Image 1 (tube, helix red, strand yellow):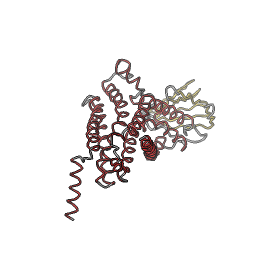
Image 2 (cartoon, one colour):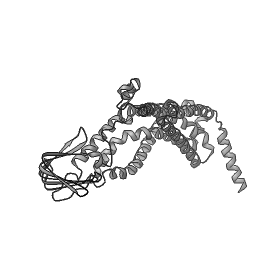
Image 3 (tube, rainbow, N blue to C red):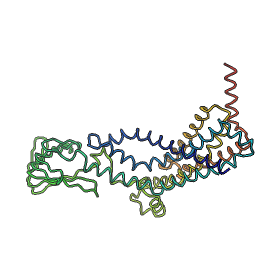
Image 4 (spheres, helix red, strand yellow):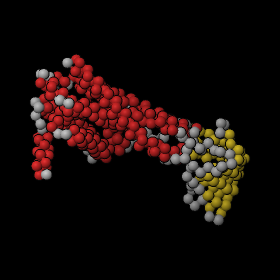
Amino acid sequence: MKLLHRQIFKELLKLFGLTVSCLLGLILIGRMLQLRSLFLSQNIGFLNILELFFYLTPFFLLLVAPISTMLSVFLTFLRMSTDNELTALKANGVSLYRMLPAPVFFCVLSMLFTFFIAMWGLAWGMDMFKTSLYEFARSQSRFALQPGVFNKEFPGITFYAHQVNNETGELKFAFVRDQSIDGASVVVVAPEARVISSPESAEVRIIFSRGKIFRQNDDELNVLRFGSYSIRLDLAELLGGYNFGEEKAKDMTFAQLSRIRQDPTLAPYQSEQFMRKVDTEYFKRLTLPLGCLILGMFAIPVAYIFRGLKQQYGLLLAMGLFILYYSMFSIGVSMGEGGSIPPVYGLWAPNVLYVMVAAVGIRFANQERSLPLVQWLAHLRNWRRSGA
């Protein structure tokens, strides 16, 4: 039995690694264009986008780990069923219950790994993502002005400087035209200016020295001399509206979510909607890791009982059950954040349902009995064949 458990566990690990790699690869391909479009024409390289994706990996793993666990268990037992290994083991007195230690141990490890991501890894990844995103925008974007070139990266604002030192941020003969004000056009001209970045506030300031401001309202033109004048630019505009300062529930650690639920005055936003998001995120961090264990156990009877059907039918049915689980979970998240139902009910409902089905399914599988649904599908297949 030790040899059997070891072989099952090895196969589960291989399939888990393969499944996670494939799913993350597909997500990477889908997100590459999104991350690239985030910077539009900014000078951000391919390796920088890969670094940003690495910091987003904990967020993706929280969603990918449960389905990867279920697929690994399902494909392992489906192969054993197709190769008649389960039949041979049954003939030698090895029941399904005696084969459970390996998949249970594997599912528990996957659950603990996902719990680690949910409790600490997710918040770390989002913090690093924000920090790196800001740093790339500050140091590597084309907002680092080029001498003699008009820069229009910010909507409604045009920059120009005759001489530029991007290392010190000093500008000579600087010109700015601001058309973001309705009904007015403002032009700032100065012999000297300086660009200063503020990582704490996620903004860029351009400080002009000893210049003039030309403000035109319809046919009226006003000219104002100044000794020092500052323009504040929000990097969120440069990054397609990404808000660095906004605190989101999904970016917090599990400990922060717990403290806010116990003491709502600690919340950065005193609103009912934000508290609903905190509650929803809190239960999401609990239910998704437990989903690894529940979905893994659910996959065993799916692969074992449906061995009478063809492999492609069983795989399609299993994928349909995956989609059903995540659909129920997504509906629970939406309704919880919207206030339709308490998040505790909406997010725990899929796990409770699948636990009950898994318990009944394993019992039927150990007795080599088919569920009524499987018998109905088999009858339907035979009826179609006889009709043809």
